[in-house]
Length: 270
Ligand code: AMP
Image 1 (cartoon, rainbow, N blue to C red):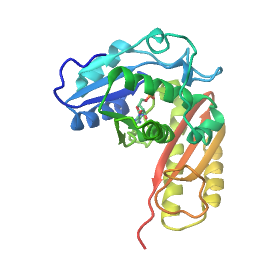
Image 2 (cartoon, protein in one colour; image 1 turned 180 degrees about the horizontal axis):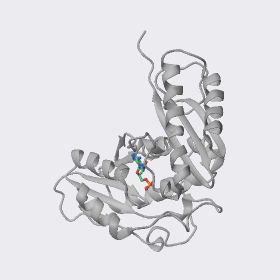
Image 3 (cartoon, rainbow, N blue to C red; image 1 turned 135 degrees about the vertical axis):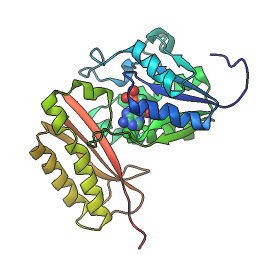
Image 4 (cartoon, protein in one colour; image 1 turned 45 degrees about the vertical axis):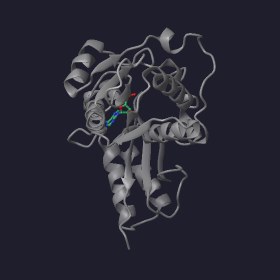
């Protein structure tokens, strides 16, 4: 895309579609910072593992366009696979060490796929700013590192996680949940909130809270727990003694649906 007129800053909001109020919050936040907002919809094959839900990923491009325009999006870019990967599986961007922990252990090539598509979308749209959700906290850090490592002139705007009234983080993948699973799902947020609250109040240790949180998810009805972690909010290194800034993060499955969430651990000034 060539910029024909330079009449103000341009924001980019990359999405995989199936637009919900989390995506809308990104567009609105971007809008407060920039004159123009470009949203993208691209279900990126390289960030899905071989046994993941690429083929089944929910798609509703017509409905998405209506919601994005109402949120204040000026241009919707929906490239095809050939526009993003004209040479097929060619050179990719390595997401670096942050990509190997937490999500990276369960989705080994995921963040390389994310970094590759985001670098390509930055090249196509040439944004001044790009908005990313804290819902995908590790992704946000990977993108920040991508920008820092390559000296890209793109400001990264983090946007707080948007939640349903019962606390469940909004996600396109929530559409996979049965009614019974949907009732169980908010336990993930409630668990993270209680871990963060206990650590903030200096009740218990990080390892004790991780063990308790894992047991809470199993008791609530989660099929399996990939991880519950308390990490340094910048490096994602696990921490034994909580110091600000820290983050509690978790991933767990309800049947075949994998949910992730995270929350800041606020340490009051002593
Ligand atoms: P996705 O379409 O799931 O790839 O997400 C596109 C962007 O929306 C990413 O930056 C996500 O972090 C962000 N996002 C997804 N869900 C939420 C949410 N509940 N709150 C805030 N941002 C979100």
